[in-house]
Image (cartoon, rainbow over all chains, first blue to last red; front, side, top):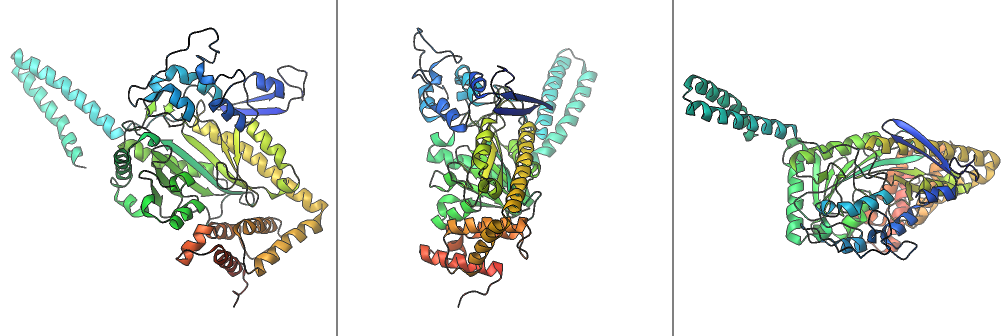
Length: 181
Length: 345
């Protein structure tokens, strides 16, 4: 089978990947695979990830994956939460805390482009506790009702105020009960 | 289900399936940047979140503090794949929560605060994923888990970011090794962004023709897509391995039978045996079972044997430290006992 990109060399790399239920197949030769950034093996991914590129410059020194040729060297960014510098990350390969992701977001994107299947998470989302969500919903409801109650009292709408007070009590009950468990 | 006791699907080729999920807490630095107090606090919170919200859970799980265990007990956990070698090394508040059936373990303060690991017998990545994600949901309910809309689950190393998931299978590939096809296959698997390693994961060499194959990517693909890609590749690999076994047996029946029966003979009669030798001979025995040349013992019995004869496991059974020679004698005895020959007098 010929490489579907150059249509000259024999395809040696056969990729099949499922994305959102759609399977895409690709047949490429070594040269084309390299050109579009597919690394031939794990070692070279890690060499590129942690080590030096062909030009003696680490990939982390570049912004957006473009060599910073002729540009001034960017300042070393620091994570405000844990104090890890981007240089430290570059030498150890490990981030300091979860907030580093925000602090280094711009510089991490090209890293992910190289070592990962994409730059955005499409998998399972963090499970928000249903109990917690329900509780929060009720708490904000109560806050709204309390505001309305204060307004009703101020406007001397006592019948409406009494109604609102009962409503608040009704919502508050299950929260107090739930807090015990 | 315990991977080394039960029989799973495609067990002639796939020994076990594993899912690992990495999770972290927002309020602490990652483990390599924590001081002792932070490490203790994080570990306490995680154990509490998993065990103290559910009475049954407390009964079904066991928490171990790696620092309080001796070297033999720690390494025995590694040999059963319940903890990683990194966790078994002395470190700040390394703990592990293990289910009584040993199908689920939660490593605390390894490279990430939380590493959930679920194992199943044979090819059953979905079963392992259901177990692991169930445990993850429980932790997510009770802890502040580090997560961002863009990057997903946040991990210490960017090679785990996103799903935080590593799905893997232990594949027994003697046919592909004997026919010499293994090299090309390992190369092409790497090109398809799968990682291939030896029996004990990262950096280890293959022992007894068992290879660990896993996904490399964790960001930009969903858990289901990653599992399906791995599973589809494994199904092809299983077919290739079976084909290689049939081909070599058809073309050189005496060679294959001789190899298997010699190994069987040594396993039955040897009086002392090193672990590496045992793993290689048991690989031949396993192949003999699959080809129908050996009867009276099951693949799961072989798995259980392998999980019990590692250097640490054998000492744990013995109850005290042993010299290498004593271990080799105990190992040979355990093997003879299982395969039916009376112990040496």
